[in-house]
Image: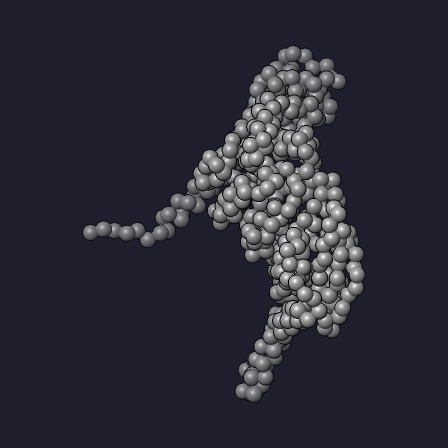
Length: 435
């Protein structure tokens, strides 16, 4: 039995696709729920009153959770209405997630117990010569604002509380990432992706895009761009470097946020983007966005055109053909830039600089450059790093060609398997025969 439960845990926690994985808190709750249900299952020897009593136990068990949350929400609302004036109550999971990161920047004036399990804390934030007041309920036992059915707080009417989100830029060196992990909104520092050594920054694209952005700013217009090309061509590195050269403040939205309408509403996302003082927003791999997420992305593209800060949107993609045409419509995406694979001459120059400490002849350089045709700077750099280990150009070329063979064979096998699955699926369908 323990082995079965362990297997189920591994599947739910690690085996399912990321979108459907469960966190430990949810799994532990399910285990507790299942345990309570199994203890109250009717047995063949039970009489009718016993069965009714066990059914009542299960009903009362689940009703108690809803009752506790309803009581907590009601007590919080009653407290705010009775003790304050001109204060509104908000339910905003996104802001609560941000608040949990910035609450130490505020001061707790006082706290009040509203029931045996919860207290209301009165926070005051002084940010950029402006005062913000928040009333946040927390669990006494856990000390955090966590509640399954109610993630509410209160603030005076007219307070643009999302302005406090800009504290995150101060904490994370002007670069932040917002994502969804284990059913929780997460905010973290945006990790800098270092391009390969000796990688030449595409100054021509940079100059053209910078002129475009500068002209748009003069006209008070927002710009959105798509950068596409094979993985490893430096698209994300370029986006971060571009933002660093112009302003430095960057928000990266993970695509998980676009699929999490039940956790982050489009209204909450709009309020966040309105308040954040960033000039660049990054979204990676928009060609991997599922059909159900397109609506949120389209909403985001439309909203950005209306915001005061006119943040520039930079989207990356590996395959332009997989992006919905509605996304690429002029007026939503203003321009598209392709990041090409390095040419033979660029490869030779890159290899020569990377292996400058070794005696590489022109003939050997030619061999390596030909073998690495169709590869990005990142791939080329990794194989160049293997040169001191194999200590032979011919051996390195052989390793490169073998890797290419395996990659081609793998893609071919994948395609063949999918064709078989498709054919089997089609053959299993009932056919409509017309008379």
